[in-house]
Image (tube, rainbow, N blue to C red; front, side):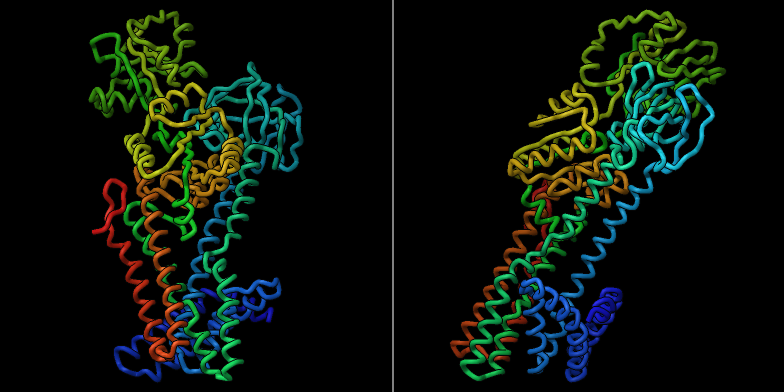
Length: 633
């Protein structure tokens, strides 16, 4: 039996494709050409083929003292084949195996996300003997021990968690903290760095404090793997239902067979008791709900995801790239003179820089001041000052753009006029000063701007019944508080690492909350899988998208209330179909024992119930969305 089980497991997809062809051919022959006897043979073949893996699963379940739905279906299919109900046998087995293939495909896709995460981790490092040593030896990351010194050059990944003991530079920590702006770190402050982050400029020597699986990046991998393993063990509703339903039907059929000595009647009970409408109605409702979501920019990866989303009462958001655009932009700006020449000169100088803040200045000049970027003044000389800014010569003008330290180095007075830069700092914005020929001309506050639809989306979530809205971020608490105040969130916490976010979600779950987490980055992976439901922004990292349960296409946060409404409507429709299926079985049993239902009429009612649940499920596809709320036509 083990060999047979392996054969069906290894060739499940091909077998289901073949069964699908047989079922389609049988339907065509039966209803288009009236060749019922040939279609019966095809149905019978499908039933026999599909019966084998069902029996194997039923036997394996019995070994663990579990009476599964596969056992009832197996007995019913055998009975149906014995009394000649070939179409019933074929369609039921085909539906079961088709559902398994869909589930397997989903699991395979989520597993590829873990492989991608592993490939992102640093594989080698340059080890040195001391902080000032430059004779570096390339070694595998597995050979690194705590307290080793590692040289990291511009454009390289940091291979371990540690602290800087020599040099300085800007580090892109988006893969760990989600922060879109590179952070300047140095040996002077003994600043900490994390494995998997990138040094965008400068040269540093790092003393390792955590290596391998103990690093923050290693914890991300570990948490994702653990959570994925726990999620794949979730049982479908049919499995839970069968725990009680299957033994009851089998017992009734056995008792009736013994008491009446009527084998055909006992088999009829098994056939009519097989919940065909349930087997068909539940997945059809889910497929219809998933289809409705896809039509409106919401990708749900399975029925369980919709069920979980409908039960959510708390939504936790990452900040960067989720509630905000994830790209630095000029949020506030003040020009200290009426002449826009300063913006032309600033855009010319910043176009020579690859720093993200520079791109924000150029974009603001283009969109707000209508400056033609293609015809900017010529730059004759530039000099980048690490950690401070850039100095350039533009058409004879001396242009300095950077932070307060640069102004001090250039001996330029920091005169802000009536501009309240303290408020900008309180909002967590990075202040950029533009001086021309020794005079301060522009002050710009650059930060991560809110998505245009964020406020409306959060308001709609509250209207739908979400009780608690929370934001978690790797940014500083001042920045987080400013955004939370603007959005009216219930809680907001900053300075968090990926594992901190996951731990916070687990804490909410211990309070009895059903938590959904919405994020977009690799650093969000632990939180996405720790939550009852992980929701990813569609334009986020491939890893976040793949390991999530629901994806908001085009990273449109306004689709979140839409997704919630669709989930609730889908679950309601599924419950209706379950009710119809169970009511049908009850009616058939009553009719059978009362004497007004026989095999032929029972099969007619049985097939009619299947048609009813399918039509009911398809009603979902005809519903329209009005402001995120599902409504009927």
